[in-house]
Length: 462
Ligand code: ARG
Image (tube, rainbow, N blue to C red; front, side, top):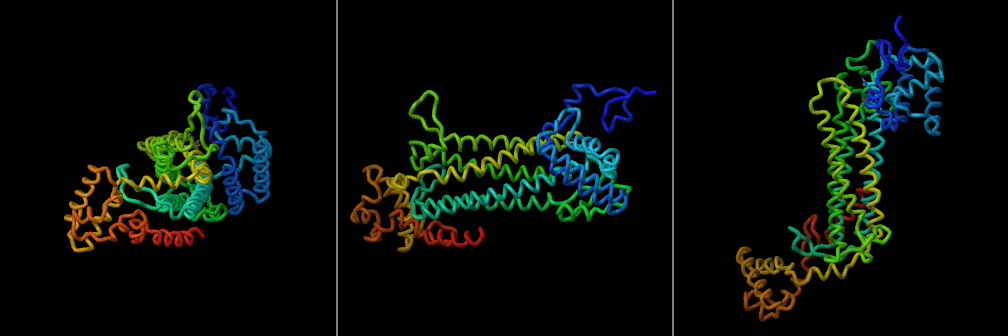
């Protein structure tokens, strides 16, 4: 007679207790407890299906479902003790169910493996989280649109190489981020379509000998359809990787925006001032006001990239089908979800409370020859080839630098000294406002073009 071993549901073929270190090492309950709601939701659908196809009696299903709901209540009330000996959330819930319902609870796991169960749980969980993240992205887009509208004609320098390049509207600059976020939203929508399939019924790896109704379960849980290959169903985590990849791109966008806010709020730029309520001080330098929030968003981008790399690396050499390595998917995924949500959430109020220093921005467009291209284009309109006009204006800029003048300071006589084609209206042409408003092409910075885009955006956001 063998010695009775632990209470583990899989302990039948074992003659020794699990080593304590192994128990701790193996357990995922400390983090996968977060899946409890989705685990129970999936189990309820599974129980209903088992009854529907006659594997268990309707009465038994009812008992199991009532038991699962009671366990859920216990967890929600904080009365559930998540200890490592329970291994993972799936076994923890099942064990408690059996304690509550007696042997009938032991029928729940018929025609199911933890392998298809965990794949289902992650998909259910991620589906909710994607929708939430999309809602947050929409909120941030709304904030951007509001700030753009309020400051529609505020002028700033546009940059290339972080060198002042051409004047642009600040609203146009903000709306560039609207477009990035729009694509982020779409990437999550694409990902959602691939998340939204149900793996349940795949069993451990080979499918099920029971007459399961996978379409019924799909319908019960709001999935588009069941997966098409049992091996793939339990071994695939590319949907998590896809999510983390979309999240990494989103963070890259937020990080670039953060970098700009950090630069703009420096004394060197002085374009914006973050609200005191969104800044922090220094413990030693009394004068300091630091942009910690955008810095942290920029910094947290690193961990989101890291999570993506971790998942790709975990999966890269795994033979089909399930391997325990895959338990490592969850922390990276959860951390990514938490991080992106907290970063998008903090961005809107930070932007809304930020002061915009319009004068500083406008001043920065002066004295840097930002409308030199406009002067060259002026000559092109008078029939001079662009290469030639570029050279002429280059000489004018050199002259201005030498004589400490802005383009604005030049007299018509000085202009004419470089080309007889310059007329009095060159003065208007080279104003920041004229430069901006001449760029009327679709997607350009002209006030007219920006207003047009805002109209379209209003329709998009509805
Ligand atoms: N805790 C496991 C995980 O997260 C659940 C699946 C366990 N499957 C198994 N065959 N041991 O991956």
